[in-house]
Structures are given as C-alpha cells and as structure tokens.
Image (cartoon, rainbow, N blue to C red; front, side, top):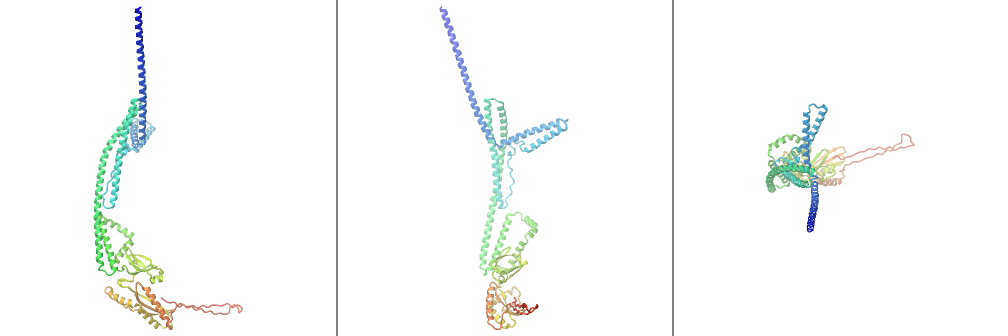
Length: 552
C-alpha cells in the first residue's frame, strides 16, 4: 500500500515537472515571436526613413546639370561600344548581302553622327566643364583708353575664376549627396536584400568614383588656373599703374604749357595798344599751344611715328578729296593770319552769287570767319534786313569776292550821292552848293584819311592820294546828274549819307533856278468825231508818257 502511494506521488511529481517545462517552453516561444515582431516593425520604420531620405536626395538632384552631363557621358560610352560592335560585325561577315551591308553602313553612320554631337564627353564625365575658360592674350596698355579695356579684362578674368570655382563646389556638393545616397541604399539592402538595391549600389559606387576622379582633376586644374589668373591680373594692374603715372606726367606738362602761355599773353598785352592786334596774337598763341599739346600727346602714345606717317601718306589722297573744303579753309586761315588781309574788328563785304552782306568780323577760327551784319547801304538797297550772324568759310578768300573796308588801319571809304536836275536848272550853282556841303561834313574824315594814306606808302605804292570831296556833272538821258563823292567812316557811312542828303535837298529847294528831276507823266486827251458816223461820237485817248528817271 505504501509503495503504491509513493509511486503515485513520484508519478504526480514527474507529471507536474513535465507540465512546468512545457509551460516554460511556450513562454520562450511566445517571447521569441514578440521579439521577432518588434524587430520587423523597427526594420520597416527604418526602411521608410531611408526611402524618404533617398527620395529627398533624388529630388534635390533632379535638375542637377552635372548628372545630366554624366548621363551624356554614359550615353557616349554606350554608343561608342555599339559602334565598335557594328564595325566588328561588318568586318566579320564578309558574305553579307548588299542590303544587309547597306543597313549596317547606315547604322554606323548614324552612330558616328550621334558621337559627333556629344564629342565633348569623350573621356570626361562632365564634358567641357572640366576645362576652365580660356585666358585670352591681354594686349599691352598704350593709351588712356586701354585702361577701360584693361579693367574690363580684369572683371572678365575674375568672373571666369569664380565660374570655374563654382564647378568645383558643385562637384563637391554632388559627391557628398551621392555618398549619402549610397550609404542609405547600403543600409536599405542590409534590411531588405533586393536585387534592385544591389544594382543601385553598384551604379552609385561607379558614379561616385567617376565624380571623385573628376573632382581631383578639377581641384588641381583650379589651383593652377587661379594662380595664372592672379598673375595676369597683377600684370594688368601694373600696366594700369604705369599708364596712370604717364597720364599724370603729361597732365603736368600740359598744365605747365598753359601757365607759360598765360604768362606770355599777360606780358605781350602791355606792348599792344590796339585790341585787334592783341586778339590776333592771342589766337596765334592759342594755336601754338594746341599744336604743342597735340605733339606731346602724339609722341607720348604712338610708339612708331614712322608707322603713323606711312598710314597718313596712304590715306592723304582720300582725305584730301573727302575733306577738300576743310583743308582749303585751314590753308585759308593760315593765309589770313600770316598776311593780315582780314583781322578781327574789320568791316568786310562778302559776295557769294546773289547773296551779299556787309558786317564786322567777330572771330577768325581755323575753318570760318564769323561776321555780324550791320545796317549799311547793302541792307538798305538789297537785303532789307540786318543784324544776322554770317559764317564765311576761310576758303572763300580763294574763290569769292571779299572786300575789306578797314584794311591796314584805313577806317574810311568813299561814298557818293547822285542828284538829278532838270536840263533848265543852274547846275553850276548846284555843283558849288553840293561841294560846300560835302566839305563841311567830311573835313574830319579827309584829314584822318590823309594821315592813314601817308602811313600806307611804306607798304603800298599809292599814286592818287586826293582826299578832298569830288563833284562830277554828267549828262544823262533824263537830266543832268551831279555826283558828289566824299570820305566817310567805314562803320557809319549810312548815318553821314542820311545827314548830307537832307542838307543837299534843303539847300537846293531854296534856289529858284534849280529843279530836282523826278519821274513825271503827261497825258493828252483829244476828242475826235467817230469814223462810223456823226450820230455816234466815240472818245479817243492819246497818251504821251515822258519819264524822267533819276539815274544812279
């Protein structure tokens, strides 16, 4: 009995122990399942994070120009391989039909054209961007205008340097992004080993390696290129400095020449009593100053003067034809200045075709004479206007009529007044009256002219030097013309003429035996009977017209 009880207890104990082991095993299995479920969730979360990161990287590189160029590089390699295969096929298959051979040849030409379009990607993952912009040869600065070009070249070189440096920065940025993308795909492959991930990892490793090679080349090239640009910029700046110093020296020389010319003008002004002479001397000094300044500039900025002379020699014929009037005016100015035919302040008369004007010379420049028109007999008889400014080309002295009313300090001219008298007038008395009036009003001008003519004998051969008024009596078809001539001021002839005319008319009107002739008409009307009958009378007018015209 006791044995049975003990056996029962032992069996119960074994049963309980087995039950406990089964329960513990179930607990372990459940724990393992829970751990596996948690790990799967973590992997899914991590994979989602990696995919999101990869999407962001790919989005940032979507429009990357380097990747687009890299795709052209890959295309070049692919097309090149296809071309080689086509050429090998054409060589191996000797017994091709004509049609097949023609098709292969066409494919080869198409591939060659495609390669030609992307030829810059041969051996370069980014094409021509691997090569820096060419440094153009900088010309030497030989004049102030070259400084502007030099500054432009400096700016261009700095922009080229910055542009090539940006290529290096873009490659560095792309390499970093590719590294991040490669790491992300590697982790993703560890979580979920798919073939597409493995292919992507292989492609990214090759792409990253290619861009690292390009980066090494670009970095080395960029250092050399930067040093070369810095050297060229320093050389340009050195030339600019030299040119500025040269300009400063020329400016000081020109300033000194201006100061000397001012002092010379100031000294010469004391020795000239008449403003006209000083004006001409002033113009000569100014011309000399301009000429010397041109010579300084010419010899400062032209390295080979004989080269300039050769060019001018070849171009002289064309220039002489194209600028004939300008050269003639310049030559005319030299003649005017050296001969003294015309001076500033002179009163001159210029005739060009039907145009005629009298005025005072305001200025004589290299190409023209400037005159101001005055109220004169020409204005009264012909133009009916005055006060205009005329610009007369200097070449007119060779081709047109220019009269000087005040040449060589002779400020007087002869002026004449014509009075027409009837044939029954006492013309001798009229002649005497007119002579006395002319003597009275022109006495001062006659004395001045006598002195001026005496001075002119040293320069010109003068024969008739009479200065007293002259009166002439002439027979004209319509009466007796008494012509009185007298000396008057060249600049106020019309004023004196008006005064003398008024005096002559007033004096002659007082004389009963002197009659001034003027245009008249006589009309005789005779009434006669009509030739057609006595009952109808028709008046007949007979007109006899006698014109007495004052001859001028």
